[in-house]
Length: 114
Length: 113
Image (cartoon, rainbow over all chains, first blue to last red):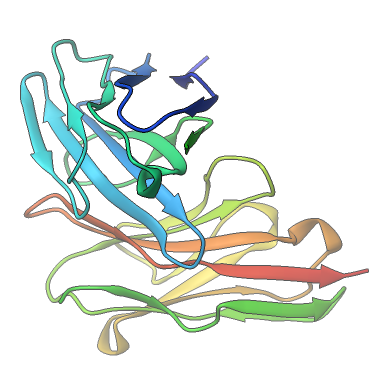
C-alpha cells in the first residue's frame, strides 16, 4: 500500500528541547516537502527536497532543518523549538516531471511547544 | 508576490444546495492545478487535478472544477452538496519550471443537514 508515514503523531514539548519529526514514503517519489498548517493561513511550505542530498527552503524555513540522506526519508528537525512553532505539520511527496505537484500527504504531526 | 487566492473563508450551505468555491492564482505560464479536501482531523486528500487538455475536470464524490486560463481561475463546483462534504477545501498551484508549489488559505465548508 502506497503511504507516507510520520512520527510522532502528537508531541508536547518545552521550549529549547531539540526534536525530530520523521517522514517516510514507500512510493519512490523524488520530491518531498514539509508544510505547517495554521488556522487562516492554509499550508505554508517549510522545506522541500527534489532528490537525495538536495534540499531547499520554502516560505517559512526559520527555526527548522531537514536532511535527505535516503530517498524514502525526510526528517524535520527543530533544534530549539519555540512556542510559535506550535502547529500541525504535514509531510508530502510527489513525482517530478509533467505531472508533478500531486501531493501525497502523511497523517500529520500535531506539535505543541510550551 | 505570486499567490493563490481563495475568495471565501467560510461557506455555510444547506444539503442539496449547489457549491462553487473560487480559486485564483497570479502566476503566468504553465501550471498544474489541484483541489484538496481535508475532513475534520484528517490529512489532505486529492479531490481533483488539472495538468492539460479538457479544462473541465471531474474528481471524486461528484466534484468538478473548471480551468479558465484567461481569468487565472480554477473554481470548484458541486451541483448538490451533502452533509458529508463538510470539510476544508484547499486550492493548490504547481509551477513545473521552478518547482514552486503554493496553497491557498483554504475554505471551510459547513453543510447543514
